[in-house]
Image 1 (tube, helix red, strand yellow):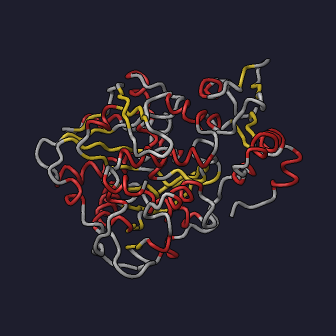
Image 2 (image 1 turned 90 degrees about the vertical axis):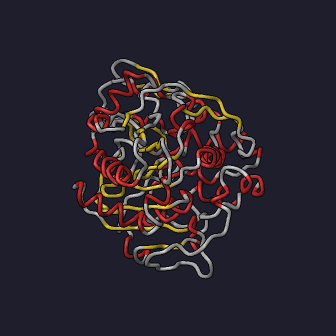
Image 3 (image 1 turned 30 degrees about the horizontal axis):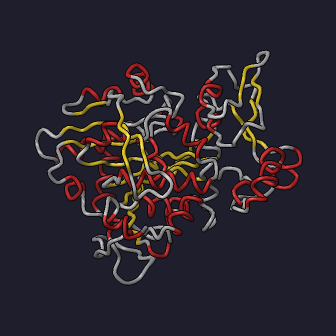
Length: 428
């Protein structure tokens, strides 16, 4: 498996390299590959000038934008556009962050280079031209499409791609802009995620999957390890050339949607290797090492960046950027389920239905918009007499309902028994 990856689209994760230029607080010794390096800078506002300088400094430690762009004529910017959300909610990559990167690129790219902002948002936003326009408007991006040689993607097409190197996903339905790009710059948001713990560079590329296919993948890969391997497969196929993360205002608590809480963390992070970037993000948030499913899967597959010790930090000591008392998502006992067939057949359903975190309607916040009903991959939510009705035997605890609710009206709670056993335990 490792040899196949090295020979194909993901070689940059495996090949050794030289020390990246810049001020280093090396966490590892010896020769460090550029792909194992993460740069970090401080930036405390979305002021366009401050952002521009911060981003230039951060990417500059990796060699600068020109190094990555070269002679590319079609560049895709892949922000996190999970839902049609106001930028102040910190659910999506901030428009000023995207604008700053556009301004930098336009100064170093070859004349006539087309810059396309593209994402396939969460399933609460259908992948239609009308809904994409609404998405861009609500996320504060409409004005970016008026810039010269900048386009807000309205192409709703996709292609099914064969990916024999994938561990669990051999065929991918990828949106056309990603497939047609000369270069992809991934622009994730610094956020927690109530299913995957964090949603960073790797998870952000899940937005390359076409529309409601993402819902089907939630159903197909209900096991968190397989779901994480699926996300890795998508990332390794798409292979962004650069990852630049918006951590100026982050999202803590029950992210990645409106149930999370915005927090000023004042960070910009950049890396070639998204796995390494996510590893650093998990450390800054305060997760115990070894608890992030994505990183566990990456380590098992021998992908560089999965071990914190092999990552080189540029810009300062990692501890200097730590987010003190960052609120982490609640822990679910499902995370620790064995692959034993007996446990999965008899014990897992009991734990899932009686002990695990489950979605509940917050009646005070719910507007009965029915987004949760529409996005549930298992059709486990229905409308009762002015309230939501959850079928917990059908519910697979993917938490798409909480993730996509525009009002943060789906709370995650334990049952009385689950709360007694797990509710007081800290995810750290």
